[in-house]
Image (cartoon, helix red, strand yellow):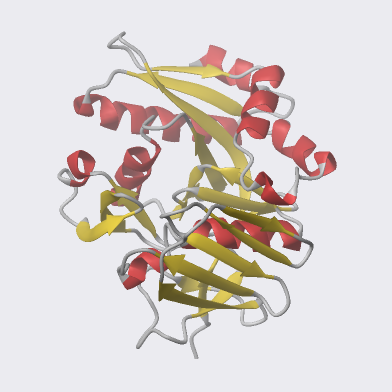
Length: 297
């Protein structure tokens, strides 16, 4: 008998859907059950109501999110009729991040992919190429742990839906990407990816950046830079900041800045450098640092 479907360590039930949406993954049968409901409705005013067991959040004319703690429930008031798969991603993310924080997780605005040694995250500013890197890694057989949200508990990441959402120019390069429709004010194409482990150790991060130089560079981040990026990418501060004691182990993880030119032809080399760096790090001698791995390269 197969395991129930869900994401981020939660079972997800969509009672109004004729069948489960695509791209959910198998989760532990003992995972908390979250009911997901929605209605076609306009938000008439900005709303931000936060308590220990309920959050209502939204902006006038946009989607409003309702999150209830016990029993766990996510509700949406959406000013358009969404494709059902949008209720897996991206609309699920804000509400599920609140539930993950209530569970005790650190939540980060980041993507990640899985190797044999664990999960490796991608940070970056908007349009830094996180989703295109994940889509390319997915096409090379690496499971995508998450496209936009990392929920981390005790050094382990709860995997999100097995997909990556792409913009039109990037989607045209992936034959498996299908048009979803207009979601969140922009057209989206979805690329399904292979599911990996439902929970996997978080091993480190890459910060993605562009530069004019044709060379691709991988430079280790200092401790201060890692600290800044971890706190900068914290997701859903509606429910307060994460426990600093839970953030410190993340700052100790290795991290590198990957710079590459805005040239699609450089993508394969960038992927090779990322994968090579993860392999070198996980086979390093005891006591090595990201800086020593960089020097060997």
